[in-house]
Image (cartoon, rainbow, N blue to C red; front, side, top):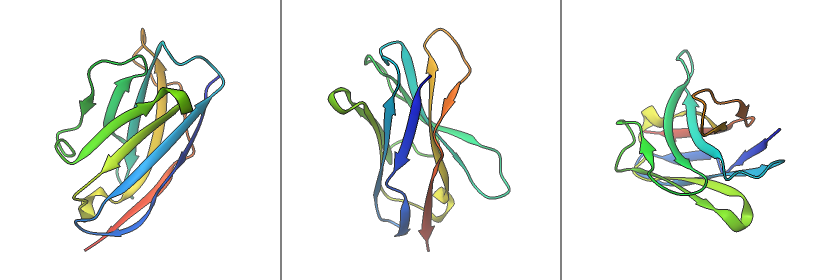
Length: 119
């Protein structure tokens, strides 16, 4: 089992920034892909960003490319999502998730953190 706890959400004005954190525990994460997803009211959950815990390429949804950055801190077992130039359409509950590198399904999810961007 992998436990994931998100933090850092809040209310911000358009153009502002927030940094989300996801602290993981329970297993060695070297074989996991860490991802961020979001779900806006009335919409399906969508992929935002991902990176392998052991390092390598990062992946972003087109809608956030150039504005969001995913990174990790191995020493603290934490994955971050730095969100800049926020837009009202970024308003959503943001979830951290993990999957084993050999699978396509994210098996472990955090509880989510609300991000609200006002215009």
